[in-house]
Image (cartoon, rainbow, N blue to C red; front, side, top):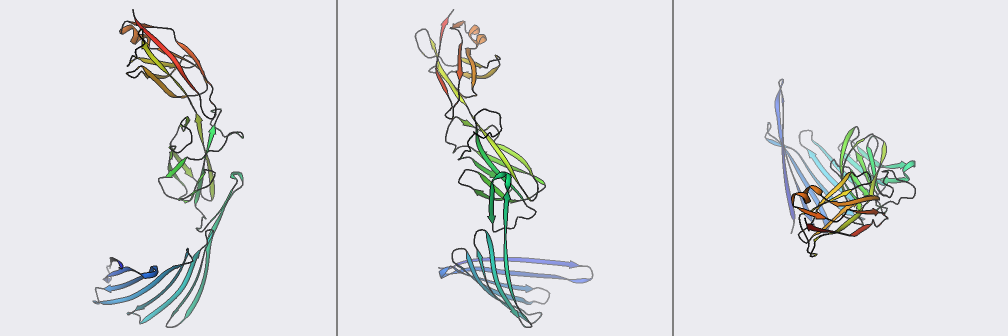
Length: 326
């Protein structure tokens, strides 16, 4: 019916001019009905073989993000008690608190408010937080469709949704409706490590070149990191013998306009081959001449083809190599 947790902490302090001070603190957390949490605490001092202090606290969540709490404690060494009652409320952009404390000699009343405003004029971003951000670092990630492949976000290149960014070194993460990710309250003056997951991007033809980033962050700034998502095209076809049966294990070479090797593909057992990862441009597909020579085979001429990537990418899948024995 009730959930009970126990926690025991023992501390020891040694000084050459004084007797050692050793004490233990036993605390518990008990959940009552209506989500009322009771936290009792006992302090035991070993040198005097007696209880040093006792304390109990009741805590109850109200209004969804508010807490009403009250506590009573007594210190036997100083013959002193204290009583506290308070209320804390988190309203998203700030935290507010009211608290009243009384003991044998005096009473006090405390009001608190905390939060922060983060603004970046060049980033078109303004946000509030219930956590102070003074002297902390912040970074915002935006994915965009890099249509021209220059790695820079141009005005006509759209921002994308679906990219997930994970911080290895913590920070409070906020995800906006436009697909951007904001990490707040990070440790400044150090390099932070981030990983990028593209599994939820809308197109299979969209690729991110660097999926791990190391970024050095400064305090009291929000750094913008624009991540280019390139669009790639696909080429495919078959390698067949003179009887139109597929041939597997044949090397297909994809060359760019400068006749530099872009990718070498191995045909599957049924002769099928394909590669997804070509930028817009002109290409040549040919079988590996050295392999054909070793196998005493010959093939038809190479194929020239062009890739014109749109947002959907592009595909050329009608290449057909016919291989014959010499």
